[in-house]
Image 1 (cartoon, rainbow, N blue to C red):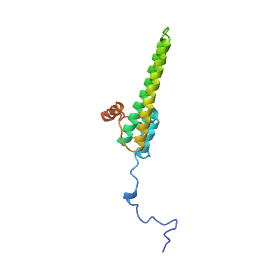
Image 2 (cartoon, one colour):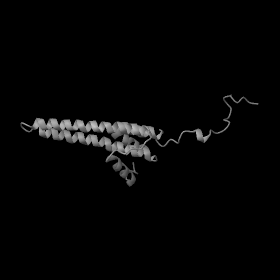
Image 3 (cartoon, rainbow, N blue to C red):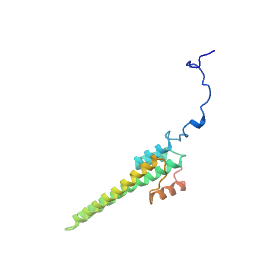
Image 4 (cartoon, rainbow, N blue to C red):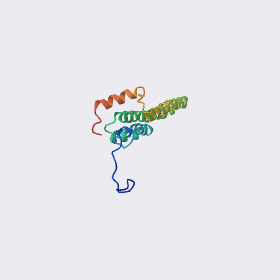
Length: 150
C-alpha cells in the first residue's frame, strides 16, 4: 500500500464545487475588487478595467462610471481655471470674481470627493450604485455596445 501523505500520491478526489469561490473573470480579480480599484483610480483605472474586463457587467459598469467621474472633475477643473484666468484680468472686480470662481471649484471638488468615496465603498461592498446623472450615462454607453472594440 502507498502512503496517502507521500508527495507522489495522486489527489483523492476533485474539490467540492460548493466550497469554491465564485469564478474569476478576465482580470483575475474578484468583481468587487476590480470594481473598487476602477473606482479608486477613476479615469485611468476605469479605462484599464474597460479594456481588461470583457464579461463582468458589474466591473464594466463601475469602470465606465469611474471614467465619467474622473472626466467630470478634470473638465470642471479646466473650465474653472480658464474662467478664473479670464476674470482675473478685469479691473477692480476681476480678482473678486476669480476668487468666487475658485471657491466654486472647491465646493464642486468637495461634492465630487464625497461621491468618489461613496462609489468606492459601494463597489467594494458589492452593491451597484448609480451616481446621479453619470450612472445612467455610463449604463447607456455600455448598453449601446460601442465599446466592444476596446
